[in-house]
Image 1 (cartoon, rainbow, N blue to C red):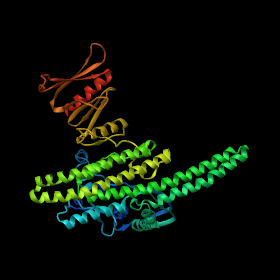
Image 2: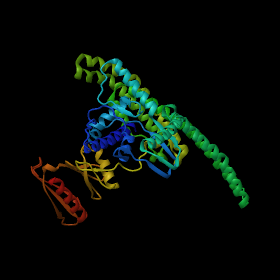
Image 3: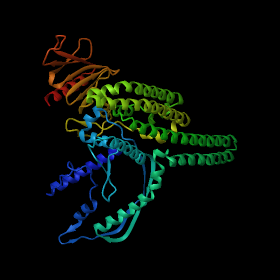
Image 4: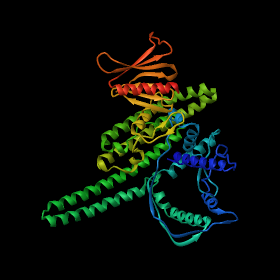
Length: 504
């Protein structure tokens, strides 16, 4: 999403700032500016090829850059939960909040996006402007499956210096990017992704023509007319699936975009956060996405929208009065009445969206693509270890454990390690130990500074028990906690990890 792109830009600029500082040049602009341009690649290349008093010329017997095709999808930037904000840090949270508010800046002459952090809407006019900016940014940037084609470059017996080469390549790819503007506009979710609809219709028509032809050829070869009938059936079915699926996908995008922008108009940040955290139908659940499940999910969201609107009429004025007195009460009344109108409408739109997704899933089955792919995740997010958030080789078990931890009571703390004990699992953050049962029940929650030592002891019948000795006596009079484990190796591993965590 856009917030991720801006954070990557900030990371790259941090590397450039560090390099400039190491070379003796004072930079120090990363924390003092509200928007940044991309690094000056031309300047960096020129510095690498300069000699004393003159620039070096470069000769290329053959320079070939192959053409490439980029398939671009920009997902909406969702609100971060409290645990996610603690985990990502203040800077990342501020970027997410600014992107959602539409506080974007365009670099001078570069066309590179920046973000204005920390701005607040103080007046009614600024509030309205902020809403319009947020809606406009979402409409202009969110797209699904935009196909960007960049032509290749071929230079033979070419001589130039760095500025000339950078200028030539920059002009070439800028021209290619401008040529792809119609594709970007046609893939915007705000317009229902018309190019995606055209692609679906084209695929359906192609199958409608090609499949019967293949069937007739097979029938002549095998002297069996059933192949021709099968080809006609496949082609007709593909045309129907792609046609209905394409129109349903576009309609679902339009309703989802409308609902997201109406959520901005409610002026209720907490409602927007709760709505972002609602479980959506995902691509890896496309096989199970049916009309009935879509209706079930949509009706639930409609009911939630009505309840949010009704309860907001009472809760918003009370919360506003507690914070700002009479002025806050008046603002709360306005927000409550606005939510009473908008939130049921948003719930109705969500009902339409989920129903359309269910229809698409029922029709396409295993072939479901399009808008659903925006919410798919191939694998869990990489785990970052310890207070320093060390990057290690990817492990699916650690990534899964870190994902589970982020949704629990220790989610705001950095991930440290975990131990799978078959029936139970021990999750360790940098501060606490959490032991979960097989059904997700929290069995033990301890701070490492409260643990005195850990020992492994065999049980009388079978298995082992990890005994955790505490510094202070618990309310029940005991100063120990016990964790049962079937295998000695697993018990020793947990004991070793706990001992290391206590020492650190």
